Image (tube, rainbow, N blue to C red):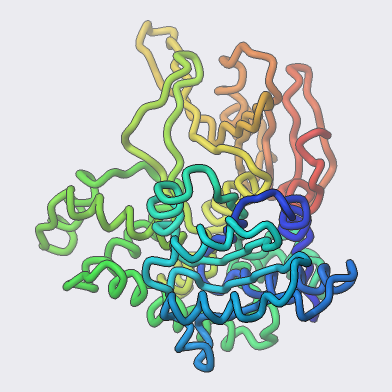
Length: 414
């Protein structure tokens, strides 16, 4: 099975020879290594680059364990540079090398070296790279397979592929497994033995059970507002455990640094300002979320919302949750919610995610916030109904089937 990652490959190709370190980030097992060592390397070879001028090192491979020492790694790389022609240095899982920044700085100073690295922890990007490189790093963030990537690699009815996707997610290896039990077992193993253990070990946590319970709470409340204070109260009432909000805030940061979850802030559409708390949290991969809950809470409406959020981020949007304050006939004020406010450069889209709007009452409920947003940006309702036809009402509000939206990269322009 060939899985294309053309979106990311084009980004890497476009950043060639720009004088910066190309930093490929993403959750573990999302396909960073495949992108760099297979797709991008093949591109270089097909472009006429001599294989001897491609220095590729997988730092998480046993045979390369001595190269985790930064002095050994630097000596190895420089020993491969034999002439003044251009060399491409591809380093996988660079965060395994302690204090790797001087190596990359030295390679940057060489006129005939183009550097590409991958990392599974955003901490090395947000702190070390930003501080040490001062604008000399260029990030490409890789997500698990989008629905369009997943569907292109699968065979069968679209409805079945969609069900499979929102159940088992988009980790590339999951897409290659035929048996549903194998998919579930793999996801459970990865979630518990790789992702959570990695966070515990990296951050020297003494109580892994607290972290696991926090993930359970987030997984059970996709699309719901929360904050550390609310989570602390939940631990107290549900688990009879006292955990300080500051501790939970740290745990949330660790989960985000590992790309397991990401947050969406609230944005006051009329007031044009952010509201810091509470927030919503979404999982980078819904299959991992489902595995953590034992595949017991497969509410399509919430999973669809999570998938739409991820798709908007894959397309490069900054994604917030919109709030629109309205005055009721009684004179009281009420806050209506727009599921997503998606911004990219000078573009903005207001988006509602609804499993079904077949009844007029449900449709009016979904579009009501839009009617109180007076700017001219496009307003879209994404629906899970089987019909994929695009409809536009008298208010200019567009209704699109969610799978049409996910499969068509230009769907927001319809």
